[in-house]
Image 1 (cartoon, one colour):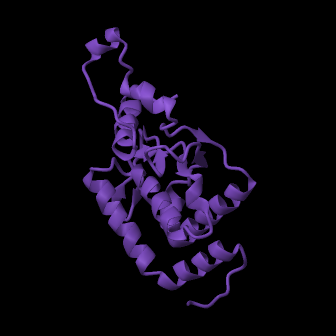
Image 2 (tube, rainbow, N blue to C red):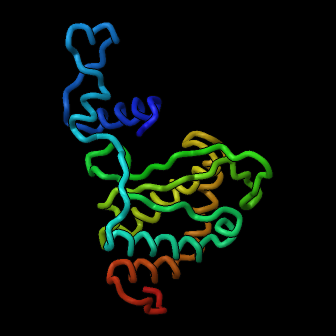
Length: 193
């Protein structure tokens, strides 16, 4: 079940991306038979509803998780990686998503930045797990993990994204090796391209 606030946000994002023609009207038009934006979005399978990954998807998810553990062991040491789910519809507005549950008690930090939320899951579109999409899958996965620190517009979220980009770019050889493994579903060659 998607909370009302997120249903509205997802429906608006879906409308911006879709080829559907829909005019937003006031709530009073419901009495005249006009559907809500949310109803139209649902009709066209536009919501980011999740499911568990299938076997082949799980292999790619595990690769993302293993790579993340190598890339940012200091993050994983203070906050375990959440389970990864799959967004059911490729028509959904977002390539990735998560839910943020405020933390209480002792606040852990990653590189001096407070972790504010527990993520019960991270979800990705199945198409991101294709053999040609390592960069997109990894960047979307890391983006969703960064929500431990805040929402898309928060300063701490932005700061963590910069930290994650820095550590990723500083490990270009490792990224190239894992991209090769991702593309070939094989073993690491040990050589950079």
